[in-house]
Amino acid sequence: MTFRKALIVLAGIVFAMPVLAQMHNDEVALPDGYRDGVHYTTFRRGGITEEIYTSAEAVAAARAGRPFAEGTVITMDDFRGGKLTRILVMEKRAEWADRSASGSWMYREFAPDGTPNAAEDGKRCESCHASEAANDYVFTRDRMMD
Ligand code: HEC
Image (tube, rainbow, N blue to C red; front, side, top):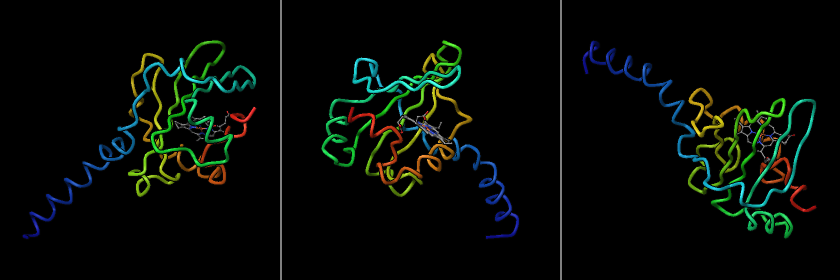
C-alpha cells in the first residue's frame, strides 16, 4: 500500500467512527405493546416519575433467583413534570456479550413518538448499569419480587 493510499484508508476510518459509535446499539427496538406487559414498579423523585415494564417471564426469573433469560426486555417511561419525555429500553441477548460493558444487555433511548435518540449510543447506560452486575445489571430487580 502506498503512503497516499494508507492516508485515504486512515481518513476513511476516522470519518466512519462517529457513525460506528451510533450503530453500537441500533439493534435495540422499542418493544410493541410493552405497556400491556407487567408494570412492576413506579419511581418518583422530585418532578420525575418513571413507570417500568417487563414480561411475566422476567418477573418469574427474578422471583426464582434466576438470571434473566436471553431476549428479556425492560422498558421505562420517563415523565418530567407529568409529561412523557423519553422511553428507555434495555434488552439482553447472548450475542451482545462481547460488545456490551454490561453483561449481554444493550441500551437505547427513544423519544415519546418512538424515534431513537441517535446521539445516545448506550455506552453511558452500560457503564452505569455495570454497577448492578450482582443483580444481572437491573437496578430494580428486587422490585419485581414485591
Ligand atoms: C448514572 C447511572 C445510570 C445511567 C447513565 C443510566 N441508568 Fe438506567 N437506571 C439507573 C438507575 C439507578 C435505575 C433504577 C431506577 C431509578 O433509580 O431511577 C435505572 C433503571 C433503568 C431501567 C429499568 C430497569 C432497571 O435497571 O432497574 C431501564 C430500562 C434503564 N434504566 C435503561 C437505561 C438506558 C437505556 C440508559 C441510557 C440511555 C440508562 N438506563 C442510563 C441508573 C442509570
